Image 1 (cartoon, rainbow, N blue to C red):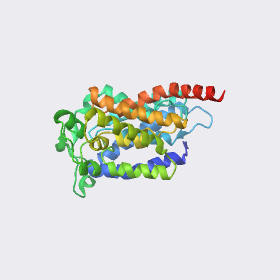
Image 2: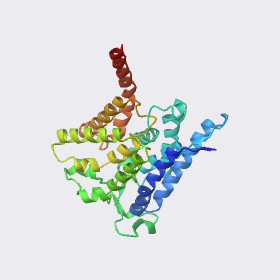
Image 3: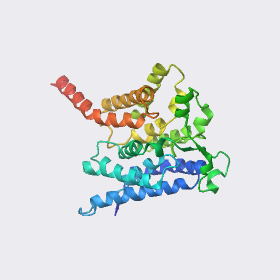
Image 4: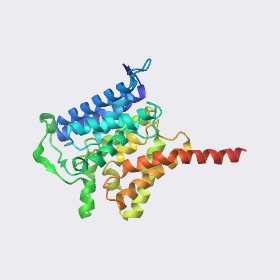
Length: 302
């Protein structure tokens, strides 16, 4: 019933420390959100392939479900997580023909849909994290710790930057799996070493984001790199081997474009987080860019 995929398994392995840290920060409710997201990702893909000969649900469905869940606020209603997974698999993957055929990153498709459709649930309530052991490992969650501020929201409201040690460790308000820069960085190293993900798109996003943050904000770009969903998206989303360009030059252009668009959207739009929109736009433009690069190579060789 499940198609085994070693690369997808390694992505899930890389996410385990991030999931455990999310439980430490916010309580065991986090695990149920992840479970619900994965159940509906599995069921949705199964409904599409159930009548196909030798049809099996890919492990990629569980990667999509887990990544989507980790990009959501700790207070997200369970049914919204379920809707996000259904949309991610249906419209981010299966309408294109299933695994290996999707143009967009499915998890980002699901998150963007619920971000636009349910903005209050996605942007208005956040939890202050626990910081002292055993912290969230002993509770379901603590609704009395509600806050409205994440590092990016706080900066937009008051121009105050969160201290770097907090950003590195992840003891800040934010989406469930996007707060700890050090754990995400270590996950990225693991994915590169195991040849599960390419380093080129990660580095190109980082270079572009650093450059344009320095230009547009005129300040130290490091707090901006460590805030919001950039690190998580840079490691787990833009490296998706299916929606990522195949040409080496195109990969660099892809990363540079996404990095620029992330800063541009953060700076000039109403959205505090620009990576998901930037990645979708990158997915849209890359087939055109790849086609243009092929034409240039054909002229040079011809």
